[in-house]
Image (cartoon, rainbow, N blue to C red):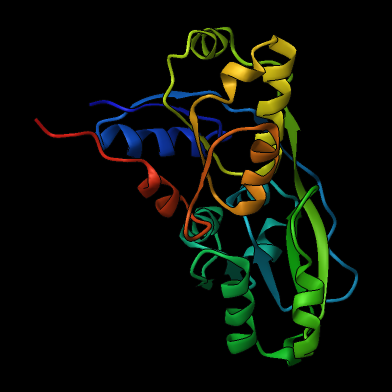
Length: 241
């Protein structure tokens, strides 16, 4: 049995997630509900000793930055494999990769970073969960935060996706951020099909991502770890006949 899925993740990650799901036999539609835009951030006045990234989008924002060479000459601490791969593609040579969540990332930085090198530069999104500065302060590590990208919500579902949801032609929806989950609810409300849009099973990267969907009445399933592979594994494999 083929599972009919909607992936709401921004590109280019949405296409990669969809390809993995299709390899497992699922029927996948991609409808990015966020559009990611780089922000032309400035480097801090004081010298920093390493870069920290909690999203591959931060690495992509470095690619066309005017001080790319300065940034990529620094070590980078990445939250997980996808972010580490994006950092490598952006030109970073020294990459330290955590296991996929912010606690792992903090533990990795505390274990490997030398405080004498100076503060860390956190390349963050305009909206973010948690406080990396507060997490690292008890360990004597200071952080400078620069907003490197922003996510702009879609106002409407693509017409084809709206039609699929309206006639109940999807079995599940994958959500990778709280902001995209909120955009999904908003799009369903504007289209007048929120009840139908909440009917599929909603696969969520974390409890925080699931919260607005659950509050709206959706049935949610949360990945055991906040990483793509764990979320994909939540989706039941089709039966082999």
